[in-house]
Length: 245
View 1 (cartoon, rainbow, N blue to C red):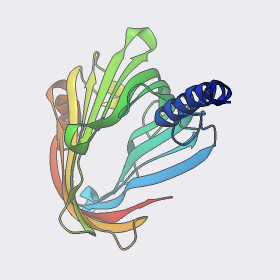
View 2: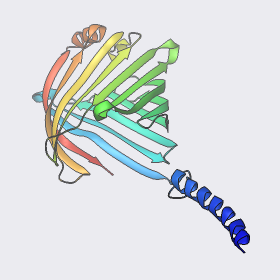
View 3: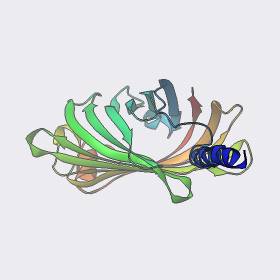
């Protein structure tokens, strides 16, 4: 009888150890890929820029995506309308997005410059995510017709002053390989758009803000802008709303 019990207990003990090991490796059951489809959209900037008279302008910058944790389709849009109704910096982008690390995604797709100037099409590729200290970073390279190359770097950071009051420094830098006089773009470092915005989150999804922005044109781009009778450097007050769903 003792031997029989021993013979029964040994297999039971082995099975128990295997079960314990499985629970340690996956305490909530076998891992599975989450294929649920999500939708997200955000208007990061929907603002008026005040510089007096014709220098007043309106700017938008937003993005939306749909997809799973592993595969997403992104749409991004930005642009500015000046006091004369002229639209500039109108960049419309579409990307396929896939995570490559816990904090960064790889993106590939296309961009089209759609505004009051001549249209330009680009193939686009880049990375976007969170650098250390939760700094939002986006770096994108572009290849256009005739061997034209371009790059855009964006950085932003949310500094929580209180649970609802957030100070956000943000900057976007554009670089081009060739002159494009029809779009007032010169080769090299082309322009910088930087801002400091203070927002109050009435709700997490809706926050009005005020701030100040600085636009600076460089090199050949500054020459084209000045030849058209415009300023190559501009500091303006701004006010708007940030919203997402």
